[in-house]
Amino acid sequence: MNQPFSMGKPILIFPAGMPRSLEYLEQCQRNGQAVIGSSSLAYDVAKSRYPSWEYLPYITDPGFNSALAELIAQHGITGIYTPNPVAWSYLNKVLKIVAPHVPLINPWPVQEELSGYRAAIKRSQQQAHTLALASATPPKQAVSAMELASLFRHANIIPGMCDDEKISALCEIARHSVKGDVVEIGSAYGKSAFVLARLAQLYGIGKLLCVDPWKSEYLVQNDAAGLVDDSIQYFDLDETLRVFEMSLLPYSKGDINYLRLPSTEAAQHYAVRREVVTPTFGSTTYCGKIALLHIDGNHSYEAARDDVQSWIGHLASGGWIIIDDYVWPYGDGPQRVGDELLSSHHDRINSAFVMGTALFVQLD
Image (cartoon, rainbow, N blue to C red; front, side, top):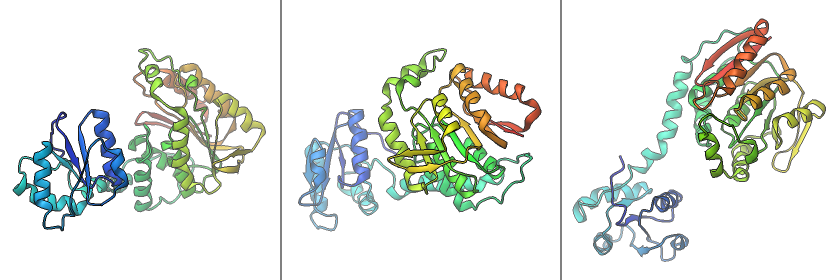
């Protein structure tokens, strides 16, 4: 458990040049926490990143303990952060002797780093018991628990709002999917896009096309309280696209690409052209029939309605439509569109359910 420490007095980051040290430095700087960086290297390139810097000998040096005690006393250090497991283990013992009032701020680093992997393994073990789905499409053999664990772990590294319940449901409908393109409207940083791409590969569904203008004017939702729209100013959409590309590129086998267009314009492109070309992903050719259509763009009623109307005509027989945020605390646009979909296509519905906040519908 992280220990409390004074915002006004400095904490020591040691060794200060490790990637997690630099991440923690940025966190401290955002919070206004005073820090001192330190390492045992005669020259450390990370030194310039820190407002204050001190040299410490290696922990194997006989003079380390006294040098540490002197540094703590000189600067009034109130806590120490170390991502190095060996240094952490040593400091956990020696601080009780040389500075019992100074805690280690972080838990054992390996414990911290493995927490996401352990959670993914646990979730994958639960997956077989989470959802029994009735569908007219015979299910494919489920992938292994390790494949699922990998899916959950890598998905949760990517920023985004796609929770584990929704991922579980996507895993299940992918087993009950026909072949065809996988189209996502609204991809942001690429979390759900990664899940869809990986499931399409694992179950042999088809290629992923992501549609997102990545422009702030298309983010305006006109939500009732204005809370969502107020947050738009904090997003850098060019950066969001770069993160999307970084998140998806390692998994692309020529089967992932995107259109940086509004949904309705992208639908017109898809209707007449099968090839999509981008500098990052190269050229991808789509079949023109959609097996999975994920609607997660602008959540205003008009925009969500237009998304469905623009793309549903390309849905393959037995294809799935997922309307994200069918349950949404900021407005009822997606729910109204989802209810209209259920009503107008009631005679074609093979399966329909809500998992987490999303509506899943399979049409004949």
